[in-house]
Image 1: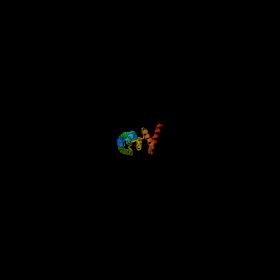
Image 2: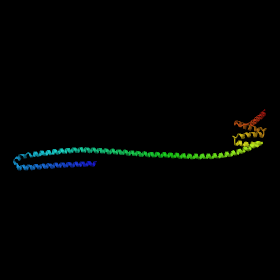
Image 3: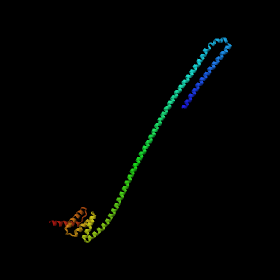
Image 4: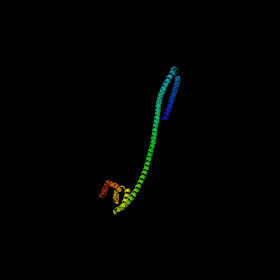
Length: 265
């Protein structure tokens, strides 16, 4: 655009110079024509023209003045056009400068937005990495906790298996011992059956049947032995509390209580 303006100015200057040259050439031609005309008139009409010769300078001055006036008007018009062109050029330059400033401002704003976006992306990336790190730590902690729980569960399960096996073995031994003790009781070997049922009640405190046979065995072992009454009555109270007494046991209780009353009297 600036190149086009410079070219326009050069074309205008060239046009002005050409106009001035043509004006000078025209004035020279007019002067030559007047001079030749005067010489011709002198030769043809020497007396008549002599008086007119005094008017030639005035006529020439008038023509020259008119020529200068026309040239001045032309120069004025060209100057006015040049001024308008300069005004338009200045306006264009100002607009171009404003456009450049506005473009620079827009580019600066765009660059700022790009930097903000990049900064935001970096912050988001950092936040995402931090969140992922937290999740990984939580996952590791949960995995460790799960592994620990699994180990604990395995240990409990193993212990339960051992207890189950021990209980099963104890149950088997208890059943065998109980069978032997009952057999001894039914054979009337009360001293031996008492010893077996006493051992069983110490191991299996909740086995009321063993406690029942223990109390009866102790009583039938020696009915006159009052030193065993306290133990027998204690077993009877436990059996009653658990609803595990029978008629035979109640008769034994009555007999012992009657014996104790006789002792007290």
